[in-house]
Amino acid sequence: MPRYGRIGAGLAALALLTGLGAAPAAAAPSTSLASSVLTYGSVGGSAVTVGDVVKASLASGTSATFYSSTTGTTGVRCAASTFSATVLTNPAAPGTATESLTAQTFTSCTSNVFGTTGVQSVTVNNLPYATSVTSAGVVTISGSIQSTVVLNTLLGPTTCVYRTTSLTGSAVNSTNSITFTNQVLTKFSGPSTCFTTAYFSARYSPVLDSSKTGSPAVYVN
Image 1 (tube, helix red, strand yellow):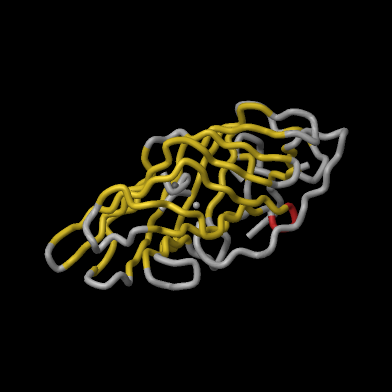
Image 2 (cartoon, one colour; image 1 turned 45 degrees about the vertical axis):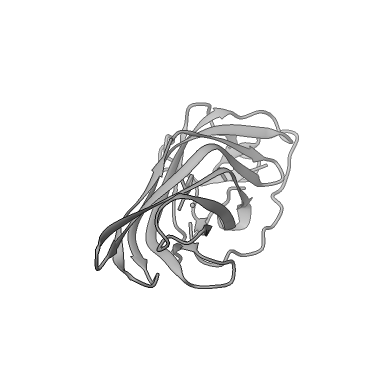
């Protein structure tokens, strides 16, 4: 999952995993030998407990996108997206924490793909996904990542399935965010209406420890 700080995506995981306007440049999080990789409340604060659930929604004013190119604007845009991940390990910093991405949703989606009239659903499949977060703020999601997009057309619904084995994002403490930029998912099945490659972008913020009272912000050390 993704370097955490106080903010503002099967694919996701997603997966069309999962998050998607242009992402800001990543700033390296502070490191501390006295801290765990993931802390809550502040940089170098209390260690996030193994078993805690970390959650986030899209940063305010942003969208998650699945576009047909890295510079274009054709594709699917979702105004809402969330993820939820369970912390599996949280060693001393510097190091790598691990998580299990158990849920990722995309809703309020629209399409400007030629021949489509709307979006029925964007679903992240094959959860959970293995996730790691390094002290350098590198977030990696891996597994049989798959997203299924159902588009409405004048001839009826069209199903597009996209797959990848890895998504990479960056965690930024200054904004308590995790950002994915132009992560590649390749079409596995679907008609020509479904473009061959979907580039996924999203920024989630703030990232919160929902298992703690008050859901404090999570930081990477």
